Amino acid sequence: MLKSGENIRLTRKESDFLMMLSGANPGRIRTLNHLVTFVEAHLSLYDGPSPEERMIRSLLEDFLVKTTG
Image (cartoon, rainbow, N blue to C red; front, side):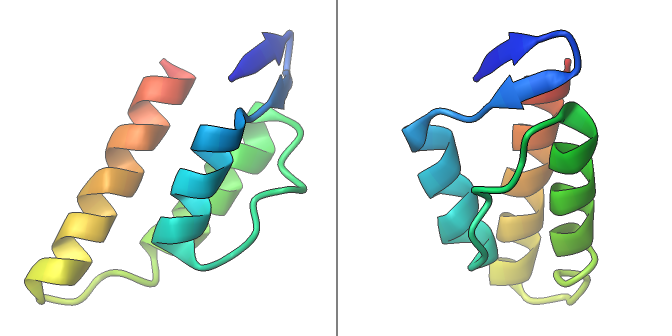
């Protein structure tokens, strides 16, 4: 990810990763706040008890922690 103050640009790999996990295009993410909002919105979709949902939730949470510090 490229950062300049609050502005960001996701790499192709990060964008593809988020699209794979969320099923939504993260192409409009331009700030850290947009990124946090995007990930949190998708985290709320995966509150179920299934192992798949827990794994997706864990991957999204890890991505958010790694990218926002």
